[in-house]
Structures are given as C-alpha cells and as structure tokens.
Image (cartoon, rainbow, N blue to C red; front, side):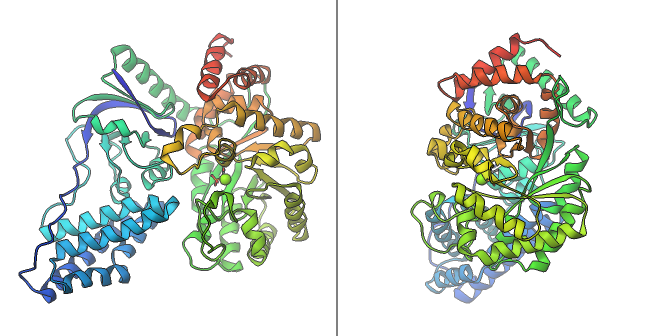
Length: 555
Ligand code: PEP
Ligand code: MG
C-alpha cells in the first residue's frame, strides 16, 4: 500500500477502483490551410458557437453555482478578443484547429501570469479549447468515462462542465493531481458533497483498475489498501451516513454546554440547504458573490433584495454578514485596480473599503433596510481588521446606520494578539482561520508550493486563537470561528477548548461536527486544546490530540 497526499475537500471517505479521465487530445500542428481563410473562419465560428451552446445547456441541466460557472465559460468561448486572436491566425493562413488551439493557449498564459484566482481559472480555458477542437475534428470531447460500474475518478483537473454533471451514483470519489482548494473542482465538489482530494501530485501514477481509499478528512489517498484498512474505511463511511441521518439537534457538548452550529454561505439561494441540515443561523455570509460578477458595485436596491432574501430564511436566528472582502484572492477592479507585488498584504478587506467608503456606506444602508424588513438577528462584521483603530472605525460606522451588533474578523495576528483591546470596542469577534493561518505562517493560501504551511492545526495559529478566546471570556463577548478549521471535527473540539463559543462552516460539514461535539465535555475539550498547544508543529498537534482523545471516556 502507498499513501499519496493532497488537499481533502470535506470530510468523507470512500473506496473503489480507479478510472482515469480521458487524456487531452494532442495539440494540432501549425500547417497551412488548404480550405482558405474564409472557410476556416466559418468552421471556427460554428465550432465555438456550438460549444458555447453546449456549455449553456449543461449549465441549465446542472443548475446552482455550476450554471453560473458554465454560463461564464460560454461567454469566454465567444469573447470578442479571443475571436480576434483566432481570426488573426486564420488570416495568416492557419487551420481553424491551430488557430483555436494557439489563441486559447495565449489567453491561458496571460491568466497564469496574473496568478491567484484568475490563474486558477486558466485550466478552464484548456477545457473550452479541447471542446472546440473536438468539434472541429468531429470526435467526442474528452470527458468523464463510463465504465459501467461505480469508480473513483482520477484526473489532472476536472473542467466545470464535467464536475457539474458528474453522476453521483457512479463516481464514488474524485482525485485530481493538479488544482488547488479554490479550483472549480474543489468548489463544486464541496457543494455537491463529493468525497474529493485535489492537488495530489503523485496520483498521476495511479492506474485504471487499482483500488484506492480516498480519505478527504485526512487528505490521503491510499493505493492498494489492506483488507483491514478497507474495513476501517467502510466503517467510517457508514458512521458518516448515520450522522447524516441523526436528528438535527442544536450543537452541544456532552456536558450540555451549548455551541451554536452556524453555516457559511455565499448566496441567499443556499440558505434552504443550510436550514435543512440544521444550521442554527449564519456565521459568515460572504457578500463577494454580489460584486464579483459585475464591473461595478451593485446598487443599494439590488443588495437590499439579496440581504432580505437571506435574512428572511432565518427568522429569529443570528445571521452574521461580512462586509465586502475584496483584494488578494478576490480581486475587484472597481475597489482596487493598482498593481500590488504582494496583494495579500495590500489594500484588501476593510482597507479597500475605507479607501472607497461610499461602497461600504451603501452596503451598510442596504443591510439596515433589509434588517428593518425582516426578523433575523443581523450581525455585521468587517474583514481583515488589523488594528484597534480600524475596529473603532467600523463599529462606529455600523452603529451610525442603526446596526446594533457590529464586530470584526480576526484574520491578522496583530488583532489576535490585541484581542482584548479589539474586543473592548467590538460586540464580537469571528476568527477567519484561513487567513489567520496564511498570515501567521507567511504562506500564500493560494500557492500549492507552500500548501504544507497552510495548516490551522499549527500551534502558532492555535495560540493566537487562545488569545482571542481568553479575551472574549474576560469581556463576556462571543468568539466565533468561521474558517475551514471549524469544519474539521477534531480541530473543532480543540477550538472550543481554546474559547470559541460558536462554529460556522459549510453546511455539508455540520453533521460530522455536531456528532463529535456531543462526545466531549468542555473540560475534555480544554485538555485536548492543551495537548495541541504544547506541540511543535501541526502534525504533532494533530497526533497529540488524536492520541489523548483515544484515552478519554466515551460519552
Ligand atoms: C477566513 O479567512 O478564514 C475566512 C473565513 O474568510 P475567507 O476564506 O472568505 O477569506
Ligand atoms: Mg478571510
């Protein structure tokens, strides 16, 4: 047996035979056209239009965020700049095949050079180009194979068009050797609850037919496992199934201590699923979705409608809305169009909003209006707060708009270290462990080469969480966790032991976290936290906690 490491999406575990994704078609040669530029142009135009239509149709079948992604792809396929690039190559005497291939490759290189979020979209272009090429050649587009039995799909990366329509009866799990945690594959896998591991470079060596266990919780693919390992994985999968079927009780520890289990949402349309999975409210509503798709900020009326829809789904419940968090991994031209060498350390989050205060004021206006029309308990918070002065600025401004509960996200070590001063001015703190880990470990959260540092189990990160938890307890203010760390069941217990009072996560993670919290008392959570804090690194913290947990009584 061999173990391959990658980034796990979700907490599932699955096993089955590998089926490799059909490899890309070979690149066409730059040979002179025998048909002439006009005929080639017609061929290219028809093929592009057919692919755009097919992508739109797939989107309509898939629905949800897949539809948005596929519609965006259809638009890219027909992008006029790209058409010009194709025409230029046709006019130079190239074939439609070559012109499409070369023009898309040029566009891809540009995106890759930009890096970050746009860089991760580069692979999407390959898929569109391959589809157009397949049309031109009159062959099937490369895609998900259908071996006639359930399988673990292993691919370089999956195109959104493929992920969107994956047959979940057949695909037991997904492993990619490229692609990071923010690739479309990861986002859609998370949304559909597919057991997935992305960026497992060594998976390129897996062969069709080989048996693997895909353990997303651990981020490990085990090739050729022993019978014992297979049985253990099957038991875990069964336990997860029963957790899914368990009653949707409010989050609580074994000693009855209440820990609210909240949802991280990106769109009001996702609220129904969160409610169905027992979310007790929303711990993080990311408002970027409203802004990312447009060239200008949405109007107050458009925003109010979205917020109203969200709040209406949670009558009487807490809903924490985060102000627009633009910059770095979420670039937005109208907020910050200057080139920055280190955008994660630049004008982002609250800094960018302050530089365009009208956008912040409009957002607060829309939220106050939606609040007045609904019965949810609206809390607002600012992202990327680094100083006490920024805390005072934001909470004062929010109160000016009549928003009664205003807090800050703790994502920068400076505000964790000064948590008592920060919390003196804020109604609550919410720890964003994704960014807090990035800044504590000085490791870009989008960069595969430093992904090993991006581990919230690191005791340095946990010590910062302890600072915030202790300050919250002293001042009687709530401290939530809304980064991915809250969705890791064992770590969730540690975070409670460090003083977190609520946990917010992707709705698909709620059942697992609810189940594990019920097995531990607050005293035990504190002991587990002590064990993690005493470790030298993330891996030993995890091991220390697992080892100690095995010796504690079962409740
Ligand atoms: C975080 O940084 O942990 C967080 C929740 O915010 P985002 O992932 O949107 O940056
Ligand atoms: Mg963040």
